[in-house]
Length: 570
Image (tube, rainbow, N blue to C red; front, side, top):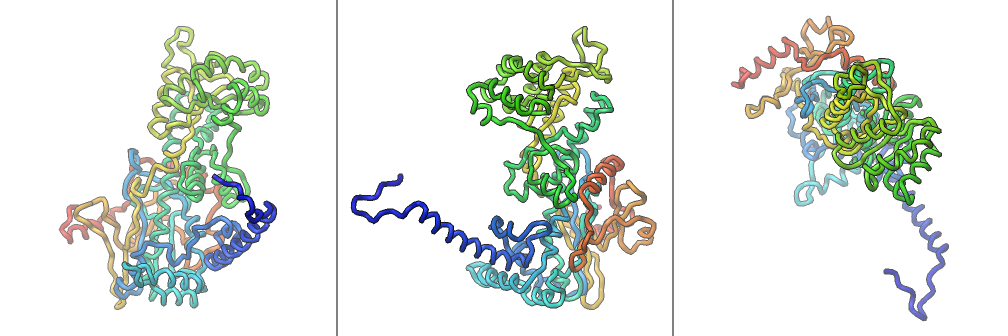
């Protein structure tokens, strides 16, 4: 607790003087941070982000020379002398809990533009020198490829000397399809896997995009059963991103939230919506939301009715949402909702009721029944087999009049399916329900969710000898990698990508899928806008059936041959 100055003590400085002193101190600190950021970011903080923003906010900035796992710094000494090395990244398992081995590839642009394509300077090597000299056990010097770093800074204008091929953003493929291939040549071959750590992180946005797509399948199936076709455009609004506050960082929220927007247009993660709109889509909007109360708003008023009437006055002529369980969900539905019904009708908008506790399925059904009781409903043209009341039998699914429900508490893929099933069994159309998913959408997954890994696949030794490299652990067949240089192609537009040995004659009859996204320096304009990527996901997911095998017979023959030669079970 603060104490007053004792009698006779020196007078305290005026508040204005203290403020001025703090301003001067902050200005000096800000200048120091900005200068440091300029040295670390080499004049750029990534495409689309001004350096001033980074200087003021990105306190976790670090030079590219340490953007890898510690042991990667030592591998340049451990690899054999060679002329070329190639490594690739792949998903090895189906998404946990799903009976579907497809995935949506997304996020490579972020890692290329913000990390791989970053121009190095001597400041990166100096920063590495200062760090590595105490990074070994006992704070002793740790090895790192100082000479190779300095060499490509001098000879390649500071750009990391590798070639990266990748699937186009939004590609739909089966697990075991290479997502990217890294190739390094000559003296830089030893740096082939230095970027593995950064590029492997593409697992995260790809997993979010894939999960969001699986949910879209659930919603689409429900619409086909219980929604009139002219309203199918509303599918786009039925899964809302509620995940911003549950993320571990702003960066995660932007990246994961962007991945979700490939499939749905509803999001409260405004940082992701802004990023996509202005950095990836030429200013064209992609994500949207509606006005809504939170518990703090509801409890700030002396009654929930007052809070609702205020919201109706402000936003009642359009869609708006109201959380209904700050005190008693049942009472809010049975007493408060009827009390504001006339005010809502007079405005003509859509009220969206939001329960936020209790059993998700039960609370949604309660909300629908209350909405029907207060506002009434119509019947659509889809015959509902679940009606039990005599007056409903033979009619379509119920559609509430100017009312709906959004469930954002406890939502995941399984719960969404349970709720949609219950909604149908209660005789209601899926058009009446929207879902908000937070932690389960952006947070409750990891690299093992689809088992992403990057592995060496080909090497040319110093004497010119070529070797197909393949990991074959007898203790885990799931961790076997693919050997050799690989070609990813498709037989026709909309067909699933397949993988062949790169030198096989059949490759000439296929359309190549992978594209070079970094060729020892950035490639301007290589990435498409977000609208194009979203259209690719929509088109290819519909065209490519679940549970296919991307490994061609020609590549499988090579895999089997190596396994047999090593005594592994094929």
